Image 1: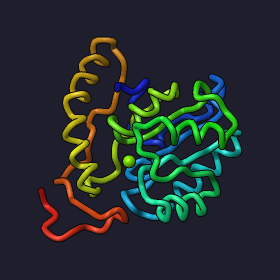
Image 2: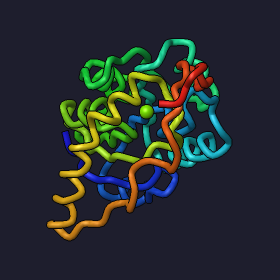
Image 3: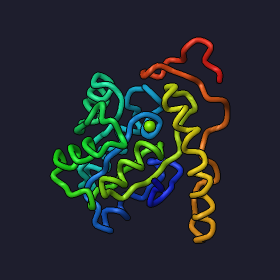
Length: 192
Ligand SMILES: [Mg+2]
């Protein structure tokens, strides 16, 4: 259930370092990991993915979101994608590995949710990196999973402290959760 590492954001990770360590591929979650929930690929995301490809990484998106969402996002980034992956099911992760022609042990799995992204990456044998969600606006099922993951995050934080390891000072952005549809549009009566 716990990630191998916990970082602030995919945009602050030293990917050259992981390349030197022998990692050859990266599986990314989309929503609230690379961009806010439901939003199209940002310039930052495009720049990051093209830099990673230059380093030599294979890149694959693995998302629980719908085909249209994942396909258009991947088209913008120019990478492979697996939609409706039912994470933490391992099938989508293994599909990503065969698309990149890599073994799970040489792949980094990066996502903002413990129960889906990280748990699935761990079960698939990848090196997992938890990142903080970009916004508090997301679908109701994600908001529920945030509540469920909270005690695990609390325990993980204590474990990291005891081991003297570093981790971000906070987990969620400030403000209240906002319920959206799968494209990130707020629903009515959206405050919970
Ligand atoms: Mg996510």
